[in-house]
Image 1 (tube, helix red, strand yellow):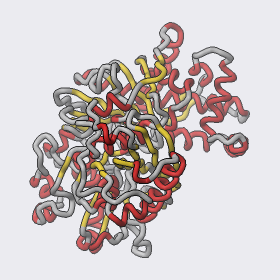
Image 2: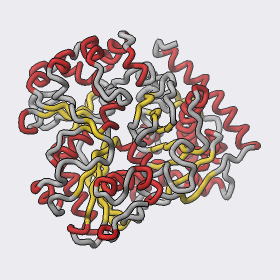
Image 3: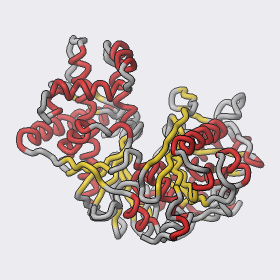
Image 4: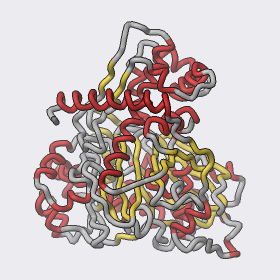
Length: 543
């Protein structure tokens, strides 16, 4: 660990902007969390359209930062480094940073197409039909969650907004610009979501010309980024006077180039000292959606899995990124379909819990010491692909399957539905791991993070469903920790990301697949899962 003695007593601030909230965490330089806070973010949804406001998000960040520093009981000057992560959402700015509407012109404040916005399905299909070599680095098929299909939608459907835009930015890069005034883009965001060729250090002009965005080439890519830097790179001269005033911090405090939120979870979890390193561990961020991050020394091309991306998470390593478009959100959607959902949600709220957490506790009570949670699913089977399949089929149009329902409406049947949904999440993860393994991207362990996977029962179920050891990071906030690590590198407390990862992260509990009857049950359910999944894809016209 490379630390300078004059900063050893400082603190690092990690800021995470998820789909529904902004969160901030203050960490000691050894990775100990000393204060957190959060603030909800507004969202507009209308079918495939999902929009947010960059100003609303900034104000939520401000509130979360001030709250975290207050709870940490430290002086603002003790914060020596700041890092950001966020969802991979598209921010559209006019001159001077004014928001431009991405949808209804009467709502100019809604200038963000959220990552889950699927309005650009047609544009994505047309891009995929080109077969361009750039697509080799997104698993062979681009997703409507990514930014170039969304840019093409804007150009075709909101031409005035597109033409007048000063900058198109990933949300993470918007936040670092707002904090520092630096327009540099993180290699993580532009490589993973914008088709920047990280291993070549350039945009591919032919790709943009082919898909109908040649004007970006003519502008020299000024509107999507010309200064591409590694995550954790110190930006400009740190916090501007205005941003420091907003946050209640000191102007000039170091700010590092950011990461996509899931990738920050990877940085905050897979590199713990003694854990085998990033190439041994698969990061699994189980939140609203889920993401898997697998690092390799050489590029591995996995059909249906995004990447390989060079230096998009750990510098010098290649990254394959899979995941599920709906994970925690799929469980929420699934539970809403049950007649007892509203009553159970009220009971959970009375106990100060979310419905999934509350159901998890009741499931553990029903198990009475047994660790074979899958048996509680009974004859219910769920393919929880309400928003399509992100990986390994890259099929945004397939949909969920729920089978085995009867006329029972009691509480036990709600628990069974919940457990069946979790099994479906685990089997989707199993498919991604298998597809990567077949292509040559091997892992020995899953490192879980994210709010949807914090209970021991869920972790054991996922280990059993996938057949792989699962470990949990010591911190309960690995995404925030990953962002804070970026601030530590930017501040010069650590010489590089791997050094900071080893110094600031560690594992806690480990969960081993149980084998025997438990494995047999999951193998049988997985076989049924794949059959139902095939039926759903056939119904969507994909088989």
